[in-house]
Image 1 (cartoon, rainbow, N blue to C red):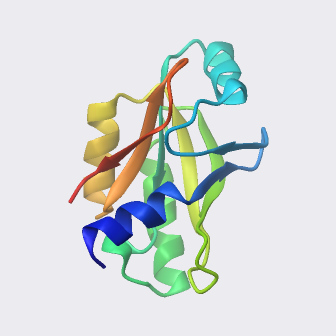
Image 2 (cartoon, rainbow, N blue to C red; image 1 turned 180 degrees about the horizontal axis):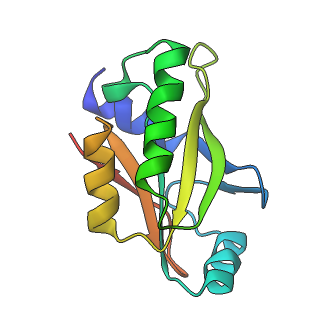
Length: 134
């Protein structure tokens, strides 16, 4: 996938959290997310998946194994389950996790470990930012 198409796919994706129910969008702020950060006394967050390394469709069992490994790597942080839902109906929503209190640098490291093209990060009272890793 070309870089422009990849960026467009990410910017049109809804990064959802099941509970508390919220949706993160690239380039937008989110009051509910800011409230959650304040509740936990942190000001940084990241939204990360381990599914489909480098946007290559991977079998569901392997994706689930990778997700479990990701959760194990993030046990020191408050985590909130969700999924990234793109606009392409052929692309299955990806299990993901909202991680509170993680630094941008650590989130980039985790994203690289799980061979992701990008992650989404932010801080309190700012817009969600797409960070390309490739």
